[in-house]
Length: 259
Image (cartoon, rainbow, N blue to C red):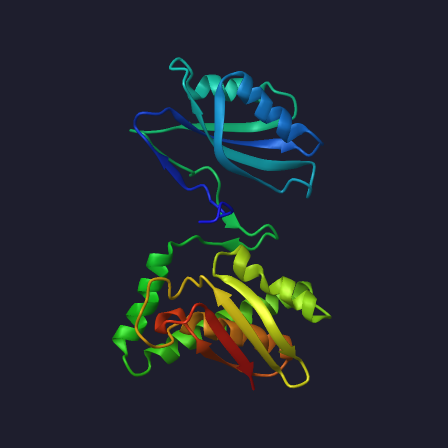
């Protein structure tokens, strides 16, 4: 935790505190978000966390957040009316906690900011699924996990390259930071040779092997995903080899891409 972790609002729980979930549409005008925060602050309502999506893509955007109030007389109806009468705000929905538990069930589906639908999974659950494949087939399981990653990476990067195909190493390196933005790991493009269809990448804090210590390379899903991505990038099928892995004591992961 370095202070810049990307929290995604899912739920809040504390029976001693008064939480509300607020979801509304806000006009796309300079200062409207600040005005909304000031409006709530004046009433003693503290914004805990949230998101704003679609601001800048149209006349209105979706704004949602968890708030806390110490005013025991305030309820969801008062808060909804208060916000609904504000300039620049429309389509207000407010949801109170139940037994101290409050979940964001007002905003669905989850999408990337380009509109692609996504799902959010805990790392423990995803790793358990991958481990189940390897356990069910001790001989071919790792290859199956690699193949799943390859298929996913090939499809995902085919979609991305349909939007933008970078012309330089620096451009590709920036696109590869999507792995950082989506929580997979901190990825660096160390070497790239398009003519030879080769590359070398380093990943820190990769989700697949955090806490593992088997003495062997274990990042088969990410390895396959990178192979699928660079197959799209180079326009020919390539493989990925994991040359360093935290599971065998290395300080980070490294992958070599080649035909």
